[in-house]
Length: 91
Image (cartoon, rainbow, N blue to C red; front, side, top):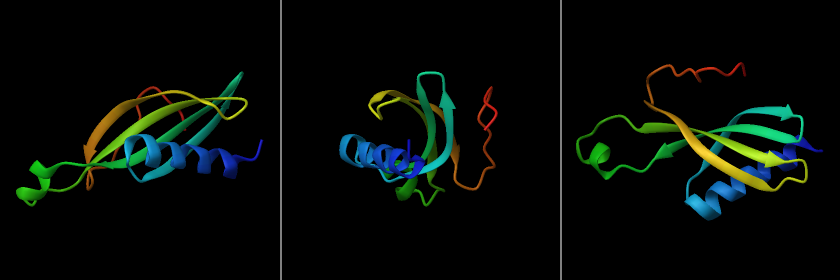
């Protein structure tokens, strides 16, 4: 499988389904597919109105060996200027 195509598929999914620009920050091959970690800016009018830093969401996306998106979940939130770490995952 072409990793570039996998990355493009995940970014397209986030744009079309969640209406968010996605930056892929990690890809790992699994037994029956892929796990992809994605970083997005969470839309928060509250943050903007108060001139606070953007909030970054980190998502984990499960992708089958045929590049079908099987599911996703947000695994962390942080302010843009904080150094983030994904717990329990060695990327």
